[in-house]
Image (cartoon, rainbow, N blue to C red; front, side, top):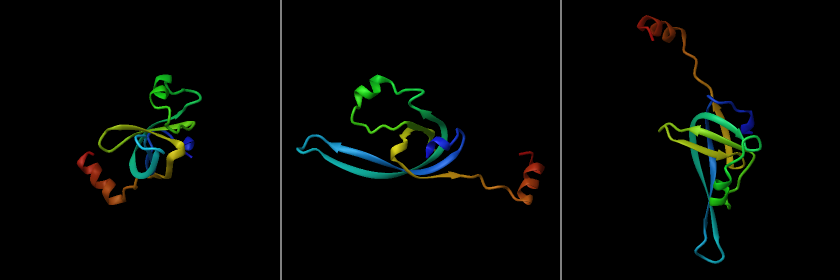
Length: 110
C-alpha cells in the first residue's frame, strides 16, 4: 500500500490506465498497464487534503482512491497516481558503495 511510503523514496511500479470511448454505444473501456519509476514527492491522503472540486467536476469518471501518489519522473515531469490502480510497487534501495569506491570519492573530493 502506498500509504506506507515516504517522500524522497525512489520507486518503480505499474499503473492501470482506463480509457473509455464514449463515441460508440455501448461505451467501450480499455485498460492499459504502463510502467513508471521516479522519486516520491508526496503521499497525499485525500481525506485530509481533498481533491479540488473543480478537478472532480472536470473528470467525474476517474476512479479515485483515498491515497494519491505524487511522483517526479526521471524526465522531471510530476505525475499523480491513485492508489487503487498502482500495482507491483517496489521501493528502490540505493546500492551501497564498496570500500574502494568510497575511498576514490574521498580522494576526488566528491
